[in-house]
Image 1 (cartoon, one colour):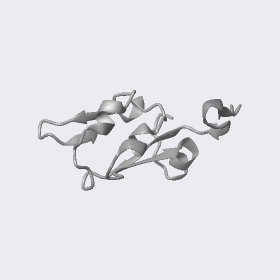
Image 2 (spheres, one colour; image 1 turned 90 degrees about the vertical axis):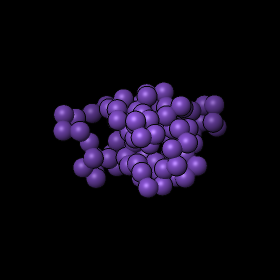
Image 3 (tube, rainbow, N blue to C red; image 1 turned 30 degrees about the vertical axis):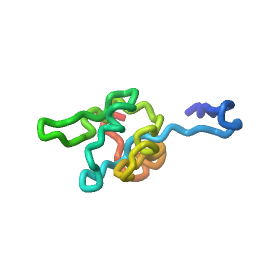
Length: 93
């Protein structure tokens, strides 16, 4: 497999690794909607009861903005390798 290195020159040239949605703790979530409003992949939705849920995990682009913006730290993201090691990848990948 050809591994491409992604360098973020705007943030000092550090190597960037995509971090995908790994877990969502509904008990910590206060339904503020920050994750839903900032997610470029529209992974999160607000349910009829007003709660936030990740519904479209396959649309996650790996930016991890949800993890960084969550005030309650209810969202955890992980690299593709970490997800594979934990057995959290979809069956077709």
